Length: 288
Image: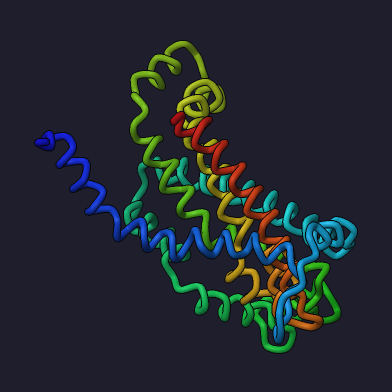
């Protein structure tokens, strides 16, 4: 029996994407499934693993350290998502105006986002160093706002604030880029008509600008929630004492009393939350 052109094209298509499917399965799907499998076991570093069913999840839900890391993660998400969105919006509105050397300013704004993480982390650690740091020198020696030097990164009470400020500084450029691209597509006739009707700058912002960029803002918020929920490298490098959920999972799996079964259960819960955010993003934002 002859094979139709559509069938031949379909088979060719499957052959072409088969290597990609294999790589995705090997590097993404298999680790996810294996992690779910480990969450039902008491993982032994030597010897056979012991099946414990849902015991890891039960212990996790009774662990106060888990809820503490969850609370820290929520604070981190609230501060970073709100901060990057607001700062990105403010900078985009400013860069949408005409002033001398605007193109130079636009280039400089992008530097934090493209700078290597490890280099800027070391820079921030030097700024807040309690002995030689710029922050303590300015606050204590120059402005005399405090009589003693403070280790803001070493103190868990203030380390979270430093981590939030670092994330805002490093990632607001991506918010700025997305927002200003939308701002520049807004029809200027709307602003001129509103001005003729007596609408001031604030009124034009709330009645024209904000509705026009609301989709971009919603997309930014959801994307930042997904990215920062699982953020590890920047937080751990800058302030490992800030135990967000990824940091808490790492400590559970690889330090102290190693409990990789518990760590796997934490990862499964995080995966389910991220999956929910992704589904919401796809349905409500992308409208697929």
